[in-house]
Length: 94
Image 1 (cartoon, rainbow, N blue to C red):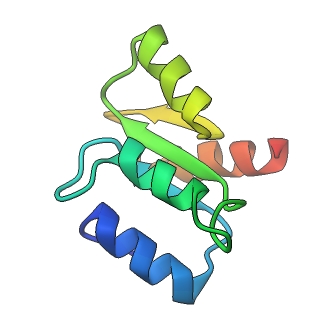
Image 2: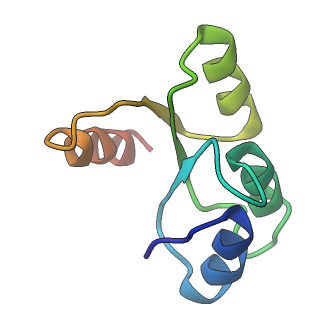
């Protein structure tokens, strides 16, 4: 499923209960970090692993995203041919 904004992620994830969420850091209405905080504060959503997709790949930014609760950060631009494999690797490491 796809969502156009962080607000929609919270609404849809509540009914859909995904096994994993890919979040862009920059989104309309509610950015990725704010969305992740909202997920972590929601009883039924807090255990869903979240991977950030972002062009913000400085070590301090990556550390901040991990400290917020992301399980991984995938940098943009990413190779669409290897993205699925990167996600599978993160999933297998959980």
